[in-house]
Amino acid sequence: MYTSVSYTMGMVRKDIFYTPEGAIIGDTIVSGTEVPIKMGNALSLSVV
Image (cartoon, rainbow, N blue to C red; front, side, top):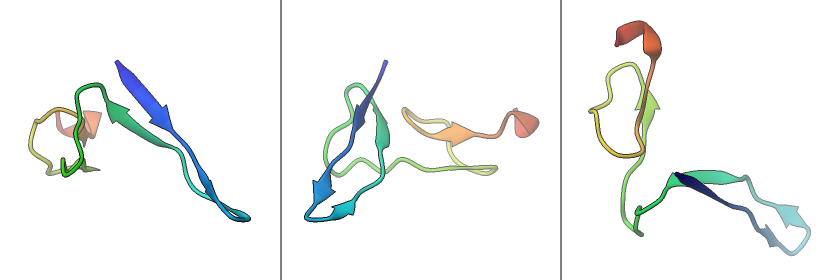
């Protein structure tokens, strides 16, 4: 299950980030065509 976080700083709206449940500060989450299969990472379906 993924959770979402959004926030604003002053008048600047920040993006919404979706993180996997269980992710902790310091975890690296990446997406692309050559990423390791790991919690939270997004691999393109064309290379699966």
